[in-house]
Figure 1 (tube, helix red, strand yellow):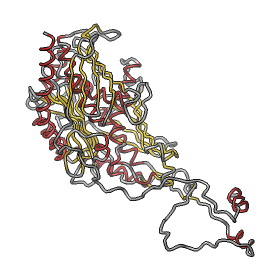
Figure 2 (cartoon, each protein chain N blue to C red; figure 1 turned 135 degrees about the vertical axis):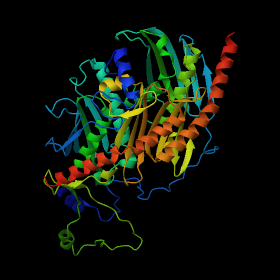
Figure 3 (cartoon, rainbow over the protein chains, first blue to last red; figure 1 turned 45 degrees about the horizontal axis):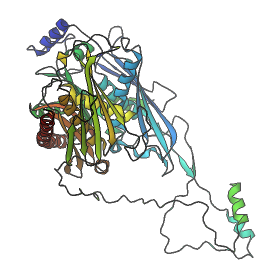
Figure 4 (cartoon, rainbow over the protein chains, first blue to last red; figure 1 turned 90 degrees about the vertical axis):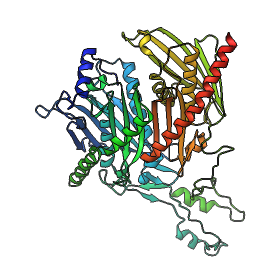
Length: 319
Length: 262
């Protein structure tokens, strides 16, 4: 995102630092280091699942960093015209004070497109959102609010989305169906009534469910099915000959292009790519793209983010 | 509950009573995985491409592309003065995509739609590094695409990028090379190049690659759906080799067009 403009001198200073041996970044990190990531779940009590993610908060005064609040809200939807999951990214104007309202709209639309198209793909859809097959479902609305942007917005958004979806509880439902009451047929004993005889040809199993009820309290429920599938994204920023992760705003503005890959770890050993995008106008050849895909796969950081999320999950179960 | 009881009581038992309401049959079993077959092409064939540069006379440059049921008209205006934007020492590439209301199976309301912008974003990304924008400070190049008929999201992005690049060449705007784009989908375990709507609906995932074959550089990778890293790499390689073939078609069309003018 060219949301900050920096001078040419600043740009070349940052690039020279990245290309130096050993590489030097303004905050002393190596090219493979993330800033500290902090996660918090259950931040929005009225939602079905929520999370707050901060990347790069200043440990001394708790300020700064990229901050995102993600919430999941479930609503009963119509299965005919609803595909189950929708994602929206809203950028707070205070996160981008230099952008006009039109540019802000475009930015949040671009962020929404990437997230929605990745997370609403059928291969990731949870199976327990169905209430009455073919009639009613839980339609899942994932809203992400960007409170502050200090760089690496895509990674932060994907982490926030994953943690919020991980935290989500789907209320259990019991379907209700109507049956002819037995007492009526007893009353008309002497009339010529067709008895309900079961035919051998009738092998259908028709669900007559017309409505449902909620046996749970509002904060109980089961977790989303397949929640270990939700992807984690990693953005590789490309300085001419090196790539680095977790760029700050200045570093983002100083490099021409970046490549975003979202990995899903359904099985820990065999990740699948759910989204791959190139941004910016850098020069790359096919060999370079292949090397970058392999490099981002090897980055040990993704499993460690997953570990953080796993530990987080254990502590939330105590809640 | 009371209405159900009432119905039983009021039923005329001497007649055959039809059901109150009826529904079309819904089959719980999915149809077998690969019922679709490619009509008359192998997995590595692209649909035949028709490209006509210079169709819109009032634009600085234009191109019309047709790949079977994907039809896109593209016009390029500019470089012209940027309005309402801050000073920028590089030029700006502005891509706008519009679907005709009749272009898809469902009517597209003639309003700014989510899909328009995501396609515009993908095409902008594909073209951004091919245009020598540093030659046009303070100016904007407007690229307008009208999708007259769409057959697959991926096809629109790929054909749109080719048309836009040809239109830029037709407008005489300085570029490093022609951008060629090609899409691929993984169906079962096979790679199908240039999928149609029906094919990409039944795919595990799809990928659109944009590159400049003359320079051997990749300008955009755009993947969605579930693919393993090795499948992604295989798709990129196959798409790149197809792009080289498409490049000669586009170059040929441009050459014929300039011959006709002189």
